[in-house]
Image (cartoon, rainbow, N blue to C red; front, top):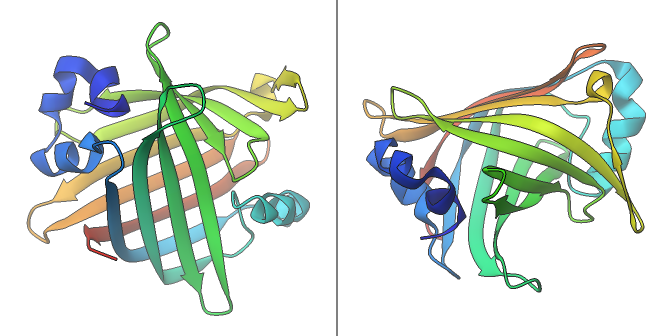
Amino acid sequence: MTIYSTLLGGNFEKLHPKLQHRYTLPIDQTFYAEGHMQQIQTGSKLLLPLYLFASKLNFLFPESGENIPFTVANCCRINQNDEAEVSWERSFFFPESVRKFNAKMTIDLEKQLVKDYLGDVPLFYSDLLFKVTKEGFLMITSGTQKVVVGNKVLKIPNIFRGRVVVLEGYDEAKDVYTIHVSIYNSLIGRIMTYAGEFTESGR
């Protein structure tokens, strides 16, 4: 068992069997997949400085587009704190650039949540709550978010939070995984949304 099956407990078995396979993630074995995003949309031009800064950390990025090829790789390893940690490496192949959206996740069993450190330099942190839907899909929503500055951890006020909703499923008719992600803010609206399909593959 790795972090997601440990966190979800008995509910893990309520996931669609393909999602159970995807999220079992044995130690040091990589789940690799490729597909396309039917649509990627970013937000207001006022957010361009944030996008440009975050893109240097392999987090957010400024491009939007349709039918964008992408890959995802997940691997669970034991980190320096002796915790099971899952790396997320997502690459989006735009016509003129390749953008990444990376993260590392561990779990807090006491609080029953996932700790998500965003980007290759973990300046941004978010609590994530995992839930299995009645259809056997995985729904992920965000909670508390923080900025890490040196040895200081600063909580982001709720009004400035990027509220995240992720729904990952499996389409049996098409034999593909499906993904829908929405990141929005109550003041400025959409920060980023994307929706697509993918299949497991070997590198």
